[in-house]
Image (tube, rainbow, N blue to C red):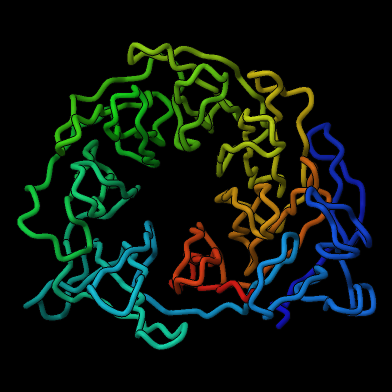
Length: 434
């Protein structure tokens, strides 16, 4: 059940003054789990593993035995589904009320205007779905012809539950317009949902994150802009679907945002901002009164394309992970005692043009691994977490030009399945095979 994984030879090279280790198979590499003989170790063939294990996905394990063994990497082959247009957002939910969880996507396109001859094409966006058929891991792609909006396209998208009804709500940032549009009951058959809400920001949104930043139990919206002169803005939620006016964050401007995390351990959530013009990441500190200041400025040497945050070494202090598309590397900034330390950063060689970064436990050993979508290839780079180091990289084959990822349990087997949006107008599904 190999997923067609590829490896790079081990070499040392220089990137902006930092020595980079390009990863290769490391036989008998240890893990951050209690290893059972060779379980979870890197391998090239079955003979490298214990007698009761196989070399599945180049990691020793017992895949397809119905038991989840910590350390084994059991990922099936990519199933690819074609959608119309360029995918700009994606989420997982039970959309049609039957057959289990589905995948919904927002796509930008150029659509013919009805009644024009010859056809006149204008910018548009639409909804596309990959529906669960109810049969084992069988899906079908479909478009929603009535769900089409002309004369505008989407620059950023996120989902959350802003009114507390348990149904997903969508936030759309329009390309070229400084407006966010909140749609309640997005993509589901909601009963009498509230009317959409328009939120006016400082500039067109290029990134949207959601979190409860002020600790009042309500979900807030954070928007970043591609305009280097425009600040990050926050819309404070009231829990019923209402929001404050846009509040600019005094420090930090950028198009990339990490998810919210408590970097300094004071119990308040903050976030990191990627600043393309400065080739840096600004880590903000939440002061507790709906204001922020700068906790740290981290140099990235080139433009950060994707930023993520999570506790990679088990000390309850989240690290920051960024992809640098110009250098084909992923950079890990350690968190030491509540402070992000640039001098101790790790630089990891990634597949071509790394973009979105996802932190998730891919091999069930209770330690987050690093996944990066390599938009210049047809691969997802997976860096396995070995006690807070990431010398072992596995590449997963997906559709061409992967852009961003989700990890969700699609089929109800309690295993994390990987959902990938590709620049080739496809969605790849990779099911776990424990």
